[in-house]
Amino acid sequence: MVKYEPNATAIIGGAWGDEGKGKVASRKAKEADLVIRATGGANAGHTVVFEGKKLALHLVPGGIVYPQTTCLIGQGVVIDLNVLLKEIKQLEGLGIPRVRERLKISGRAHVVFPFHKDLDELYEIMKDNPVGTTKKGIGPAYADKDNRIGIRMYDLLLNLDELEKKIEQETRIHNILFMNIGISYIKSSSELVHEFHSFGIVFKDMIVNADHLVDEFTRKEKNIVVEGAQAYRLDKDFGDYPNVTSSNCVTDGALIGAHLNHKDLKETIVVLKAYFSRVGNGPFPTEQPAHIQDDKVTEYSDEEAYNGDIIRKYGHEFGATTKRPRRTGWFDCVLVRSSKRALGPDFLCINHLDTLGKIGKDVGFIQLCVAYDYQGVRIDYYPDDMELTHEVPKPIYHWFRGGWDIPSSLRNYEDLPEQAKKYIETIEIQTGIPVKYIGVGPDNEDLIVREDIE
Ligand code: IMP
Image (cartoon, rainbow, N blue to C red; front, side, top):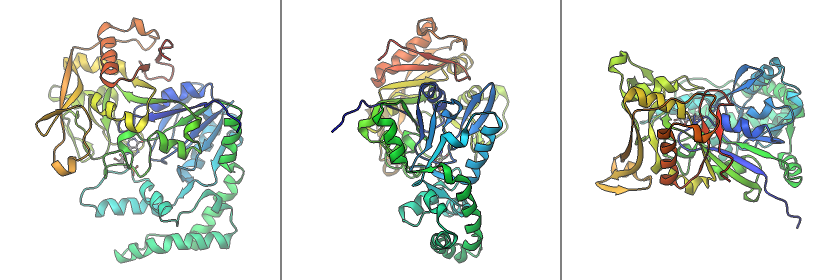
């Protein structure tokens, strides 16, 4: 058998998403030949910058801004074709070269239909404890995939009759549900078939056998970057079920979604923020009190701000996709330590170290969670039976006095303020994972890379 060196870098969210994976992904994509989006759908979002102009992407890999890359939307993604087409047009509008030529879509990726979004909303209404989904139809689209009635990108290339048969089968089951609760939501399959057959014509040249495409790159030992979506605690197996997304967004799930296997993986970079945030419901041990109710910020003055409000203010913590105010809290080393089982990290990237310094100055201190008090016992791992005990673990904190200032132009680790270095080094000791990348400002370039860490 011919052996080749593994050449894929996976970039994976380490907590509940929104860690700023785009920054390190963009750094890595600069030298990449193939950039792959592996899981999730339009529930994810990150900003790309091209010649000073910014654009929020939900489906197209951010690596598209680099003209040498081929970009693939892999089999693990569920695709909202209206969103995808809008993004392609926006990218072309920015002057990014050969977007339709360089963007490839796995023929096995599944399609999100408008009724999936309606179902997402309906299921949330019907649940005793709603998850707080993004309402982008993600769960219902994956459910149809699991139920083997989903429509794949390849199906859009079928003739009208064959496609209509498939759509009719998929909608039949859902229509019963809609009828039972007295609404006729779903367009008939004959209406949908024309719309989605037209999408087939638009995307025809981008739809590929992605196993074969990826093979071309792995065999030639080309640089591959896998852009993960969502994060460790949102994974449907490892995460805070049921408050999770509907995909396996940990490293191995991302590999499957990207048409790769474990032998292709060279390194895994786990991305976190120097403080934590979460949108949607579910446990968050280090969460700080804030003026948020039902996804809305309630009235308060600066003098009355809770620590959670202060973190949200400096971090601009509002959902990129949903605009919801995010819940915020301190960095949790216990969670990161526990994530090693799921993520197999080589390095950490810690974003927003500059923001944390400002938060510390305003609050007067910074806390770093190093252990939990759970059921009256000190533990050093993330428990998975909180629904059973009805208890969220209480963090045991390491304290740092005040905060720090970091100019976004700073690139040398040694030049960081002593307290900030101590903070990073405490994370390394507590988690056992080296921090190779540190975000110090809003732009993609505002990143310290510790080249001495290998
Ligand atoms: P869904 O993925 O829309 O089904 O939402 C399930 C849960 O995952 C909700 O709590 C969402 O807020 C959360 N979620 C999904 N995508 C993201 C993301 O990209 N960042 C942060 N949270 C997300």
